[in-house]
Length: 134
Image 1 (cartoon, helix red, strand yellow):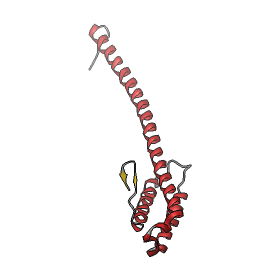
Image 2: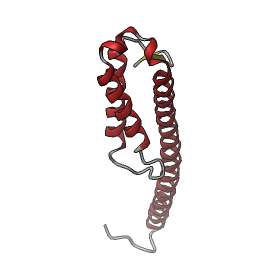
Image 3: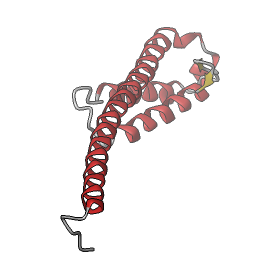
Image 4: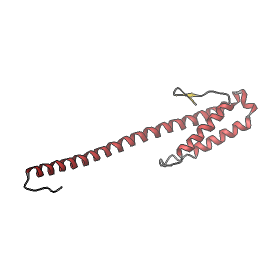
């Protein structure tokens, strides 16, 4: 569309376009800043939840190892249970706590959850945390 510089409507349309472009760029900038802030908060919360869960497993495993002989099912499956204890501890210790960008972290944590459920099952115990069954 050709705009005549002497036409008053052309200058209005031009000014309107400039305001629109400026508002759009400012909106994109504000949206990007908010997205970064929300992503940081979400990541921080997820990381904190994950650390709590891993700490929970480690604490339970250490406590169970001290008291495992109190379980009747321990004598029946001692070797398997001891092996699971060792595997779980090794898996937790091997987690890289300094590299938050480990793309395999969710898979590693899922494997820890699975092993922990196996251990709970072998010991015939039901474990609850934060009103969730593990």
